[in-house]
Image (tube, rainbow, N blue to C red; front, side):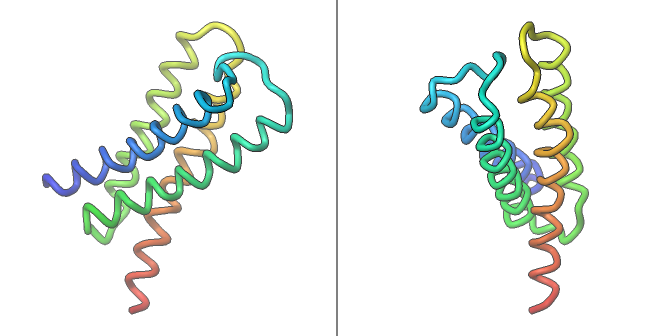
Length: 119
């Protein structure tokens, strides 16, 4: 059970820390309007790190099923939904997290399970 909890925490940390770094380094406020180019960059960047977060969740938890990834999905989408309803300004980052990044974290876990199954 501890490995499952640590796996979810690590997967979420990868997503959150990478997101914070992107917005700190770029100087862009995640709750304000942004250029289309930066939105596309965020989409690609967030997708990659969400996938990695989901993969790492599987690597650490070693469950062989997607239950831990569904927990990660719920946490990611849940915090983004909470932020969506409680923030003022633009909500494009929260919408990406809910509809793209959270589902992609499940794909990261599925990738790892399929990769391990082929060995």
